[in-house]
Length: 156
Length: 308
Image (tube, rainbow over the protein chains, first blue to last red):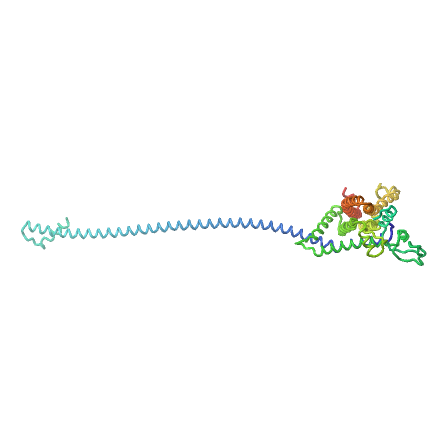
């Protein structure tokens, strides 16, 4: 237990080991630990960011879905309207066509009636002349009484 | 080991003697009776010879073990640091990082100044002193007997716990003291350091009284300054020396019959378990105090006054 040169030797050894640790052990070790800390922090931040992005995307998707639905509804509404319109137009066209046909038919009927009337009239005239002839038992000169007969026919 | 009283004393003395290499003067009568013709550098063959070598002697075992353990620390930690991976820390790296983080946190708390050297110093002290203390848990006879067998010299002095040698603990304390002085002067300047030594703790603000108070202040401050490294070194030495002593005493009891053997075994186990605490605690205390001393060296009084 004598105090001797070992004292100085130990001091130098101590300083050497401290220097070694200071230069070669501490910086890389702490560097790695800091880096890992940073990495974990970054990872957490990224995760949070991703979470936010996901939420945003979800909201966007929902929005888009809603928009699409709205659009589809719009299109369906338009189509319905258009169908109704077409139906209406067709109805109208049919109606007008019907009306036209009706008018034409009426005109034809009128024509036919008139012709029948005419025929009837001339027939009545003929018959009345024949009747008169018989009543009078004379030949009536048709030519002479044409005016009369015509008058009669017109009265009928 | 030794059953008889006189050999027990010899056994203890043998265990407390370092392997010493030093210079013996000319005309010195050695332990075996031979007289030296001229002064020689040689291994001491007895405690008396070691004592007579004076200051110019080296404790080969102390230095050998402390340097060896320090190299183990440096090698393991430097390798862990070099191979350290950010993504996949392996088993030993995790352990190293655990210790490093513990020290880093502690130093941050006790040392609020900017100095990149203090934390590595604390780490070195903690691990190195712990390793040196750990040698205390190796049964006291194993390594000395192995060394004696290998060297073929039955009386080889061989102490394996460097921290039971006051040279080692005081040497480290001396280095801490040197760093303290160095940082004090670097941070405050030589004048600032001198002022700190002479104008505290008594300070009146009046020039005349201050000059009168210089000797008193200097005496107080110098004592407290010198007391720091001495208490630092002796605390570690005292604890480990006492622990080693108990182990040696228990080892003697091993030789006293069957009962002695069983009793000593139990005692040894109990003391070793208790000692596990002591060696960690002492390494920790040495580290914390060194850090605190560094903080004191960096501390400026004008800063202190600003704080208040």
